[in-house]
Image 1: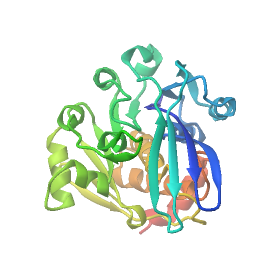
Image 2: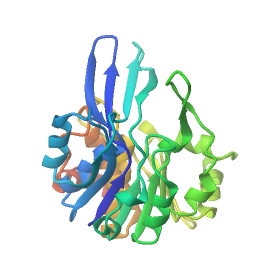
Image 3: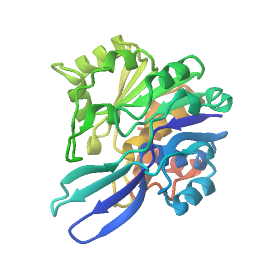
Length: 298
């Protein structure tokens, strides 16, 4: 397999002043990008409950993902509620959590993958032994830190969290992806460069930092590469852009071994993601390469 994405899928409830809608969510859902980009087998490892909608199963299956790692256990799936006010500010609640993901959920097929990418929604959903197992088997181990820097209070509200397992987890991965606020929450440093350097000293070879509308920066021990924002044809929904960025980067970097190209490829994948709501209508490799071409010439 080219890639396996690990983390809880979510039954998202999205509430705005005008609408209320349900959607498939979680970073693992955006793994549907991989088969759209012609990845050689792409799978997920996740845990859902009996309440997980059949239409979501059908959507995931029809995308071409390998679903042997999608386990139904218990009564409830992870359930996030996102409430937006008239200015677009979000309050996030958690109504339910699925059962944790453990090493027993990994088959030999998963462990033979070139890339194993962890994308937890919450800090406790993935047993750290899963990351140790991936480290011992996959060519590249990667994480998105989102779930590690947030917690859930007694009322179910999502709040910031001190990432107490940071050093141990980062010592087990090759690639780590932050947005700029997550990096500030994770490292006390005077600058982003200093923060990224501290992360690199803990073990990762590549640090990805996204900056919303200001593009992204790729840090290694001997380079710093600025990636511009790639323009989209419409701005509909930014949910999942970080997940798409990470998956696109990993697939292209394994293919080309070129950091700048992989970063532009990732940014271009994200530009398609903002044009739709939810993890649907993923771009083809031709779509991405066509839109990316002018940026490669800069």
